[in-house]
Length: 377
Image (cartoon, rainbow, N blue to C red; front, side):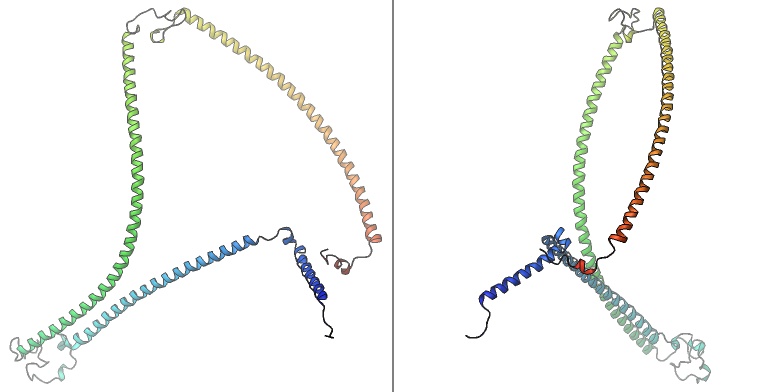
């Protein structure tokens, strides 16, 4: 109750002072920023550009992710197919090597006894299955061995076992090959269906264009045919009329009087058979008169050209004299201007020296410039 506190009036004054200080600081930022003061900011346009850029980047990111997923899927499929092919090749190679190792031994060859290095260390024949009894041993002949039946049975069993193993191996290879082929055919069917759809759409569009073009060309052809038909009928009628006129003309009937048909000085061209001597004389006289008129006109033109050339020469001489006088005047003005400029330059130099050496000897410090632009008022 007896303590010293801040009255409501003081709080209001303090709040008003803080508000004026804040507004003054904002005003300084606006006024002392020439770009914002003169041009301003279009916040709506900036927000719209930011939103468009964000949408474009999101769309590009989605496209990149879709492309990356499709690329990974294709790469995985390719790797799987390559792995299967490598496994098949490796298994075939291993089976081939195993078959060679087990069934194609060096000592099982027919000519092994010829190349056997231990042949001389073997004892003589003991029984029919003796390995030393070869083709050239002269110890056993065909059909004289004791275990013929058992040997044939074992050979047949071994052959059957080999055939069954080959059948199983071939069946397994066929199944794996069919699986790969089915996968490849499925992809090919998808691509083929897509290509068929595109080809069908293109074919429909092409047929529509061809149908419209055919209709338009048919209409043009019909119009041209009708026009040719009408022209042909008109030509036939004109030819028929011309033939009738020629048959009934006075030219073919050899009528000699072809003048004074349409007047005293008019003749018909279709019945004209030449000029008379009087007409030829009149024409020659008229040609001679025209030649004389052309000669007089050429002489008049020549005299006019000569007078015009003389006048142009006089004008050229006068122009040259006038240009020379103008050049002399320009040169005099230029010399006078040069002298005047030199005098003005000398006066300006003296005035500048007076200002720099006498009037403005003291330079302004940084404190002088810092007292400006400290407030917006």
